[in-house]
Image (cartoon, rainbow, N blue to C red; front, side):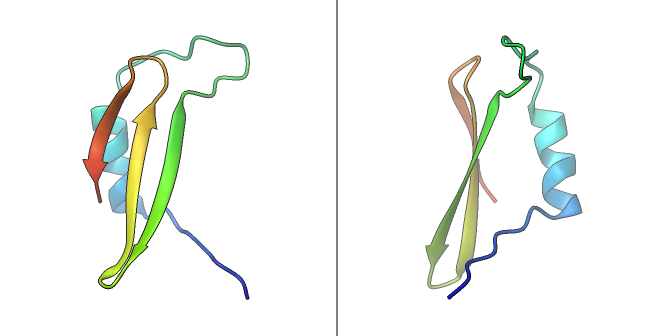
Length: 58
C-alpha cells in the first residue's frame, strides 16, 4: 500500500504568504509538513521550527 501526500499550487501560495521567517541553519529547513487523514480527505498542517507557530490547516 502506498500513501501519497501532495502539496498543491494553492497551498504553496498560502504558505509563502504566511511564511516570513529566514532559515536558521545551513540546510535551510524550517517548515514541517504534516498530513492527517480524515473522513473528508487529507488535512495538511505546516509548522515553522524557527518561530514555533502553525499555519492552521488546509
